[in-house]
Image (cartoon, rainbow, N blue to C red; front, side, top):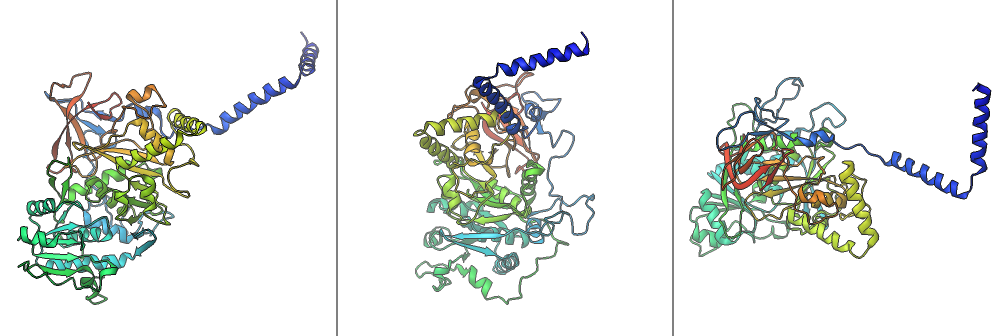
Length: 573
């Protein structure tokens, strides 16, 4: 066939096609083109390559009898030391030089000095905010807080304090007292707030505390003085409405020689130029220990744990390295701890936010919030970007949203489609206009935890996927333990998969599948044979054992049974 014949045939074919064109052909063609265009425009690449989720930790090539292989994060491979350093560099140091491991004092120094790295945020510092009531936000000057650290620390040293118990709700004074103890070589003891009188006495006695920093009305002064004669000093943190009262007088009839002072008097009665400079870094020994109490079960006594500064620093370093560069905490973030700072995981995350020069908001009401919306409303006119929340609050948020959707078929279908797209595409969807958080929210990251051995509500992977769609924020689920600073393991920031029973049905909102991701860079995990569970060549299971520089005592058995999934993430048996 010649070229002319080919052109004639082509012309006849095109002419015949358009001769048969009608309204139905137009509808079909338009639908097909629209569908292909929609697929191309809305297609998203996954946030992380699926291969990186298929094997999230590496096991050691050798294992001992009665134990599994030792599992580590890919970012802390075998043969290399676990993460125990903040890599603190002095101003002007080469970016290629290795920095110091650092300690708690370096966290505050970094918060005051601002971002040191070259870039648009160089020199930027975060803000420290206190939320009072429902309509007042107070911003604290970093220089003023440095002055308070020095004055409170010097006052405690002059009074002969050794073991300083901090019995405060989430507040800037709790943080300042912790740093004052670090700078002035005092043991800090963080007590869970709002405990019964007998529990407070027990914790003071076991920690041998001789000083308490607390707030009037919350601390049972008369009861403690009668039952704990070793208490010698009390520092009251008085709010503005009660400053006119005399808090320095010991109540008559107590028969006590307790030295009573107020935070405001210590700060305001000192010369205005006193305490402006932090103690020099040279020739200082490491800070004293920090003691915390771990709430396990309601009928059990709190477990007392002493962490060294090195333990806490290792936990902070692991949290900083767990967040990918694109999502790293920085000066543009507002961090809200909506869980008690007496919880070591929340404390470590808050210190990590300070070290990253993020702004931090303290609200005593946020930890008691029943759901996310209430927690965010506890900081009026502010838009947190990073939130530490309890599993109970997250589950309440999910359940309330599910109850609301029941009345609308369209809402149920729309939500199911968004959840399905999240799981199948592996990419976070755009912000949900029906989000459970207030309008204008900038929330991008939610951190929550399972407390090993406690009656913590558990979050399935289906619940986590649901919450990601509801809030428009990525959710990280961690496994924590009493003697581990920070986390034992936590889910990857970009891990949106369903596992176990959840994977069988995308719309299952009460799924049982769950996991805690791989170990963080400051821990290594193994499983020791127990209760008939044995590790072999094909499976690793037993009691969870954790080692690392963030562990008090270097190694701890969690007392719970777990196993390593095929994707090398940790879950319960």
